[in-house]
Length: 69
Image 1 (cartoon, helix red, strand yellow):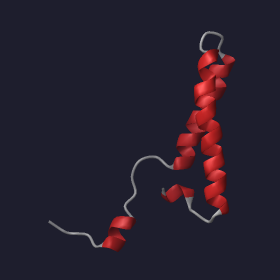
Image 2: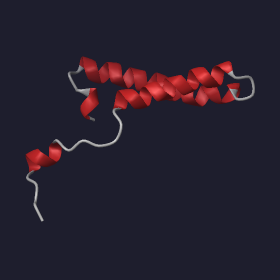
Image 3: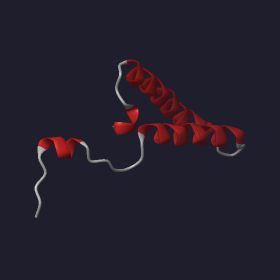
């Protein structure tokens, strides 16, 4: 079995990107807020959307590549 050194392990990618996850959260907020029955649940996803957008903005401002997280 091949072993990886530290530099190779830092470059392993997997899962969805942070921006895609935040985008899905914001889309869910929009969808829920436009529905009549599930509109009260839009607050929960709205909080996740707001925090996610703030985090993406802050990380980008600090020079952190948000697509590598």
